[in-house]
Amino acid sequence: MKRLFMWSFSLCITLTTTMALAASDARLGNTLLTVMNHLSDDQDTLTFDLAALKQLPSHSITTHNPWEEGAHHFKGFKPSDLFEQQNIEGSVLRLTAFNQYITEIPLEDFTQLGAIIAYEMDGQPIPVRSKGPLMVIYNFDDNPALTNEAFYGRSIWQVYKLQVMRVEH
Ligand SMILES: Nc1nc2c(c(=O)[nH]1)N[C@H]1C(S)=C(S)[C@@H](COP(=O)(O)O)O[C@H]1N2
Ligand SMILES: [Mo]
Image (cartoon, rainbow, N blue to C red; front, side, top):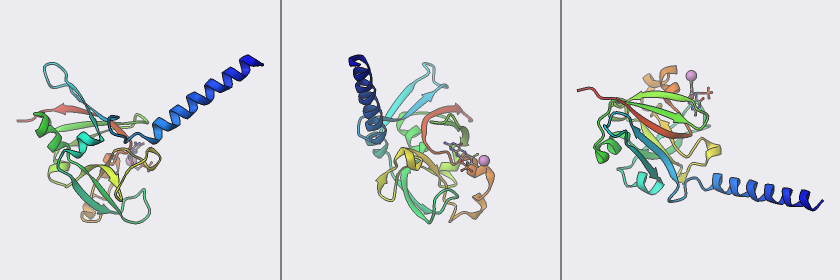
């Protein structure tokens, strides 16, 4: 009986801790994004918390998307700025989500088509249950040509890993 009590007690602690961590994903100091540069000689791995991502120039997009009701205001950064800050040369990003969904995005989508990796929706960090903490956002409202499967497929949410895939000179 005593053992069962101790067991349920520690299970409770574990669950509470897990839930607390999930709720505070965007807390300062917690890594939101791991950047792996397979192209660098020493296979660099860099980690970014919310504060570090917010140090990059911020960009906003207000748009509808196929997954949310109504228009939302998204704020985030462009990987092109992150690459510039870190002296990374790359032209394709492979992004991985919590569910191990993977998509590859040309860097031009961010520099030419105005896409961002959003860390805020409607002025708040994006909870995991709302597809956060990081999601790729295209301005579908401004750019109806993007409303097709190719760009829906690149609209990855719950991103945590960015791999630098290719350099083109
Ligand atoms: N994290 C994550 N993002 C994702 C996906 C996914 O499975 N996981 N599916 C992608 C694909 S293929 C499409 S078409 C759109 C829409 O997916 P849905 O129709 O399942 O909502 O989200 C994209 N982003
Ligand atoms: Mo898709």
